[in-house]
Length: 102
Image (cartoon, rainbow, N blue to C red):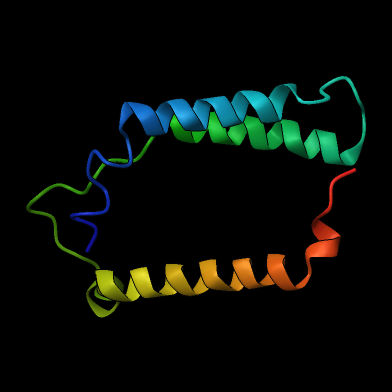
């Protein structure tokens, strides 16, 4: 199922560097303010840094897929991701006034 998506493309130095930069930004942006938003931003920064530093690898070549992985092929997964991305984009476009940052 995840033979092509979990390859080195997701763990390339560029991806790790970008995730690390995002994590540092989220951690350091208004770190001195003690509000719920900034506390969640610090936690998100740690989470992004953890994803960048400890990525998952592809499954071993000879491993068996679970019944759910057999049922949901890679193309179904890509379709679900595209659907969610389109829904997020539609939410941002149609409800843009709630996404303004002051």
